[in-house]
Length: 84
Image (cartoon, rainbow, N blue to C red):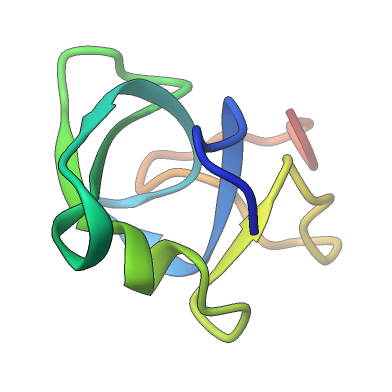
């Protein structure tokens, strides 16, 4: 996967209650690369993820994926928001 990272990411599981994220900033070199992400629905939250983890398809997918019907993308009720 290329560096710098793509702007949009979908987590395979909820992180801080959310699944769809955007890149805020990134840095590091080699094995020490990291990416800071924020949930699309709550820009005040920020998580830092190792680049090696972000490249793991079982945990993260580049882009925003449509969620299965009936599954929300946040910890709050977001009826009608099947994808972002």
